[in-house]
Image (tube, rainbow, N blue to C red; front, side):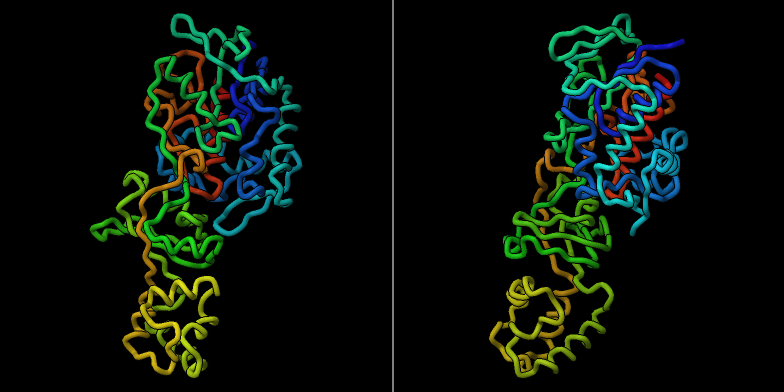
Length: 409
């Protein structure tokens, strides 16, 4: 039986839901509040769009700390490999990079959005841009229509809410779906920033603003010294603290700590143990034995970092290298292997890549994405209380849950 389906939200979840629902013979209309589709996709991956991750299903679940088990049906119904095949079939060439991250060969997120537009056109979805939806209308526990922001009341059989979270509100993610869900009796789990830059108590980070470190290892510990998280990769210093891929992933692990009372340790030379680093330092000091300490670290550290390390080492910058004793050298090695920062907060949720929290998974059927409270009401993507690490996992969630919602509405 042909149904009239409305999809609210023109991001990856909404686009996938609309296309699949239309493919099954339904009359589908997609409502997007912005003047274009996929605004958040356009800025994702620094404009390159990390579409998905090339891992297996268990890998997808493992990298989804926020209610990953809820997504088994979604991932098995429409997997990352299904997504890659679909996009390739639509003419978008993809490639796999470090960490199994999948990007368009063009390194241009606009090509991803253009391909999704093509998908909608091929399926026959009607798209209404600049069309915010104000509320969902129900009767006797069933969806009957929507009311648009300009007061139009439109009838339908099913609604898919795919409005995103509250991060990056400039892309249109302003929490509309949470208000709709609450008004229909759904519980919305507290919204928190996930994959977000971190604040530090130490003010010297300002001196390193803009410095990117590659191939470093970070470890997070609580105040009792228990290890919370460990990762290797790239990070960035900012005027307020730290950011970059491994920091964003690390932030998800301390969300429940309130982003405070946590120590971040940076190993600047993870390829060398303390003894080997000591030997390396000894060779450098022999090479620069007649230079002052402040001029002897160029082979070891980025120039921007040298003054900070010297200050933290408590060794006089004017001291000649041949006067630095063994104990001072040992302490310098420990500093390079364990540069500590005290985490005291996170940037606001509107700067987070992903919103943690959302419509409770206990009130959504994981096999269909339909509400357990209101018949004909479906949820997809970031509006649901699911969230994952960086690496293409959150977009995979959006596409998979969108597909499942569209297949069942």
